[in-house]
Amino acid sequence: MKFLSTAKNKFLMGCIALSGAVSGSAMAVDTPAKSGTDLSALTDSIDFSGVLTAIMAIAGTLVALYAGYVGVRWVLRMVKGA
Image (cartoon, rainbow, N blue to C red; front, side, top):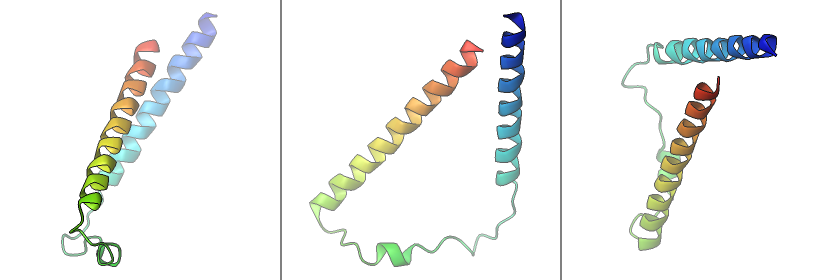
């Protein structure tokens, strides 16, 4: 049983190191400030004057925040269980 625990710890540490290296290299990419993402094709067809659009935008933001919160809790649970 100790072998499985050791293998699990090595695997989790490898995953953490790999994700840190990938995210670090992704953040280190030098992108010019002027060549940002052009979302005008998506936003031109949306009428932001409606109340329903504002409610849906707030709901989408809350869903994204909740999903992030659940993801962080899941990762912390995995790290504590290792």
